[in-house]
Length: 235
Image (cartoon, rainbow, N blue to C red):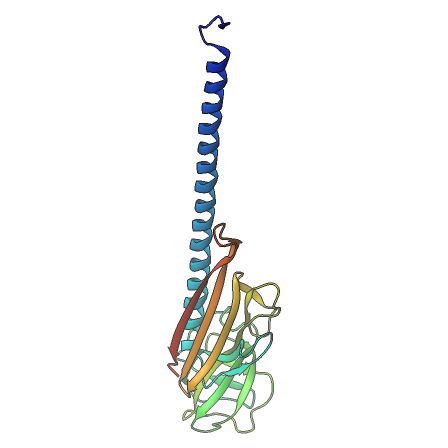
């Protein structure tokens, strides 16, 4: 039988090529499988991190809700919560006018209450009134419309800002955050569903489900991750 110059027969050479091809295919398949597992694992970490960060942020904000929030439906049942977040509180120091409230104990900066903040009198003279803040100094709030009864040194006030969590479309899977009526800001973009509930006057329940961007190659389905939290309001 004819032999090559290297001393291999044609059959031996073909057998060697076949063995190398099989080993190369196995190595390639192992590499692809390893890459797919890495992509899936990274996707799971991303999904869980985004979901946990979104949940932690909502919990921190909702703990400061002043008064019971409003739960409504935008895309799916009970997926929107609107609430007044407590930003500050104090006692009026008196010497107010029909459009001002003074608190000489404060040192507010110019960036404290830029837009969409409300001051409400919760006890003392003028209790039950709430007005939008139109301007302020380090110790004085100016309201957008006159007080019916100007607060005095017996008046206790709170400053709040209207906020909300919601989704605006069932197709984009983006959980959004609204502050002071501004355009919804994306909070997490892997959320497939979330719901809010009020078991009682001081408790808020949150359930949130996220999913991976890519499918699991073994199942052909996206992985999901569900979180549930119960928030006890401080106010």
